[in-house]
Image (cartoon, rainbow, N blue to C red):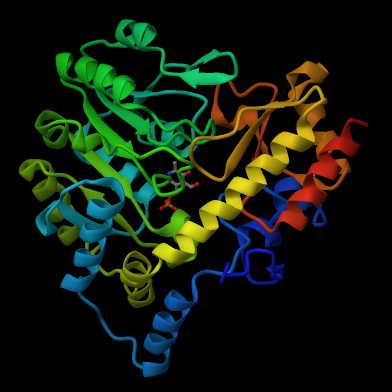
Length: 385
Ligand SMILES: Cc1ncc(COP(=O)(O)O)c(C=O)c1O
């Protein structure tokens, strides 16, 4: 490996959520933080070099959305995901969650229903509630440790107020990369009921062995009746640079979003974000391949070390998040959390992802193996395993 993913980098006192908000989140500033979804790895040197060049220029004036940024993204989507898109399909924005919030306000009305498939990344349902829309919970089905969409209950939950579905693709926190069959069945239902699909594909580049199928690549209908949200932030560990992409091939949807961005002067993307975006999608592939190998070993480590314990874990098909089942221990969720914090480890509570998360904790394994080993040891210590 040419990149050193084993290196421990001190992140304390860098104003990062993961380390510097531990006291606020866990009531304990010393827990080993394995929660919020960013990585403890240094980013690709190529991206650092390009950001450094921009910084060294010394002038940081107003910056427009230049062509090479779009070109890098379009090439990446074609090469990695066999997805053909055009420059006019792509809008740049400040993040996937801000995009979700904007889209809710633009394309639904208060009281409209939006489907989520829980347990799911909490801003999905929080953003719906914050804008006085109604969350339709369609809990995922669990079968032999793996999750599938419950399409029967989904069909039953649809009313004439159901306007939108948020697809987490791949799914955080359960780590599923939805397959073609599942996606096509979901598409048939959404088509029948005229439901606009918002496909959050931010984790699409962190895949282990499977190929990501962009929702909008399923058919011309899917492309015309969906909005895809993605970003280089998870893939290349640049979340703090706040840049993402909104893709829709539907001209009306595209123009509505574009006009809203213009009218509200939301188009000013940070120069360093633009620089990193282009650099990542142009020069980051080798780093990503090495990262995926490293993460694969981390998954194997978790699997091996939880064997012969009551804790169960299905290796994720995508994402660097492990969804660990503690329910065999028969503790309440609060007790699980408290014991983990006492033993010095900070994970995300399963219950924060909505119903279906009871008894689970989410562990972020995008860290050096030595950190992961310490984390697993502390988990075991929490329950004397
Ligand atoms: C599914 C999903 N969407 C969006 C985000 C965050 O996106 P952004 O930082 O661009 O708002 C995350 C971060 O964990 C995520 O897991």
